[in-house]
Length: 504
Image (cartoon, rainbow, N blue to C red; front, side):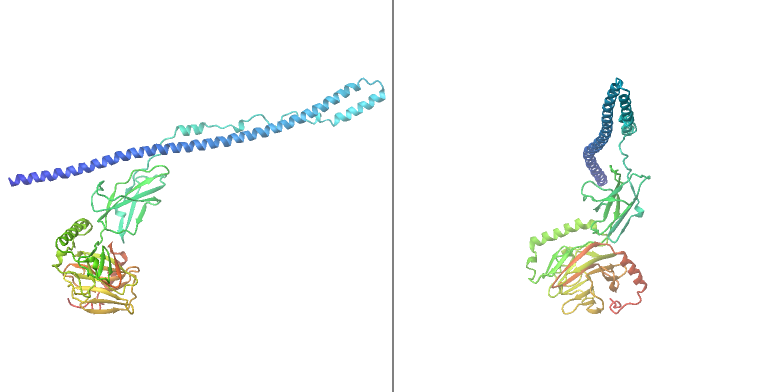
């Protein structure tokens, strides 16, 4: 009976998974049908616009060429009219001279006849009729302004749809995820000289497989990429993966998208745990600020409200669990053994996610007027009256801006003053397995201080602030520059200082 039940449960599970796949595929088909309808309408609209532009060009050319013909005709007509006017004047003068010569033939007196003959001869010599060119100055032909459209007509008749570019192929081996940047590299399956630019799309996801239609963020678009590689910078890796795809475009049409690739984005993501914070601190996700009013807006939640708060925190954990690596654990209120909020002068708040292995990095920026703050890590057993760096289970650097700016490293109630200028932002690097906690100038990546020890319990990020606020940046990878510094520092690990050499 139990075996049959187990078999049936497996069948039910298999059918349920298959149904989910079919539902997802149906969504994809409906989405594709809708896109076909939209894209076909868009293609027809673009075709009409192209022909309208072609008609406009032809109409403009027709007007220009017709105007040229009119100007040529006007020039020729004017030249012929001028010649015609000259001929008429010459003819009129010639007819007058002919009449005079005819009359002279009737003269009987020899003297008068000779005189009239010489006069007519002189006038004939200078007569315009004998200087005229009896050939039109211009031709009546307009064939030099005729247009042969046979070649263009053949080209237009041979017009076809512009070839659609093939989908690019993303080279996963050449893609790089580093320094919260993603470099995507691709190539065309064959040479295409018509390619004008590429369009890259990406989106964050917690799914390691193929992209899904449902439950996915929208695609971010980067257009007009001229090269076959692009680096997306300044990302917060608050999801486990990033999907990327790319398409090629020529002057008029875009091709299909490449097969999407999924790139892993390892990073440490956490928020500040408001249930642990001192009542004089106001906590909002990754921001904490000292509140001199005594935290009246953050009174303790008891009874059913407290239970509801715990459930909300656990729900928050389950929603964020996809962004957490294995060996990082969300810490709910009950995980601290019922310890109350920090109190007294321990103006402290902890992160809500433990570090149990691996290398992690986060950054902290203090307000300019912050008088005192500490940044570090601690085991979960930090007492509610304890301060960071004053116990054997906490490590930190402390910045005091009260009278003069002092930067110091603290652990086990021992302090080492550091002769280094206080940076605008502090980077925290934690190598749990390597037993190393380092602090950096987050801007220049200059090393401020390093603790070396063997961590025996899970760690929580810890923060203390007084008269000011802190902003925590999470979802960051270990910067490449710091990885290089770590390798260099490991080679010089023999030169440690007094705080590092303490036995724990």
